[in-house]
Amino acid sequence: LWLHEHKDDRPRLLMIGNDKDHTVPALVSKEAAQRLRRSKAVVDYKEFAERPHFTARAPGWEKVADHALDWANRHTGASADGEAPATA
Image 1 (cartoon, rainbow, N blue to C red):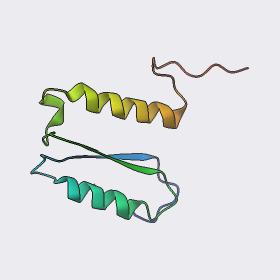
Image 2: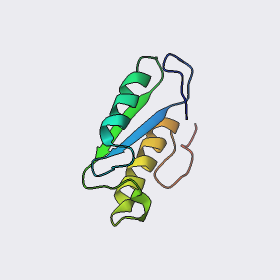
Image 3: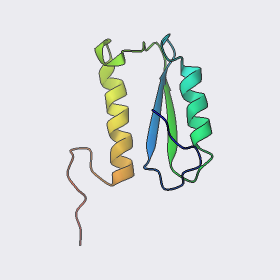
Image 4: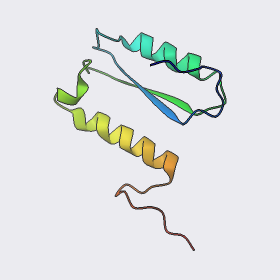
C-alpha cells in the first residue's frame, strides 16, 4: 500500500500499531502515521499493548475492533448502533 504523504484530500485514516507485532513493528506503523500527517488529511494513530500482528485472531480482538468502529463513527457522524444521525 502506497499513500502520498502530501495528499490533502485523502480520506480519513486510522493507523493501528501493536506492540507485540514482529511482522510490522508498531514503530513502523507510528512512523507511517507521522509521515502521512504532513498533509492536511485526518490521520490518527492508536497503539495497542500486548497485541500480535494477527490481532483479529488473538484474544481480546474486540477491544481493537471497538476502537476502530468508534473512530469510524466519530468521523462519519454515525451512531454506535450504526444508524445515521437524525436530521431536523
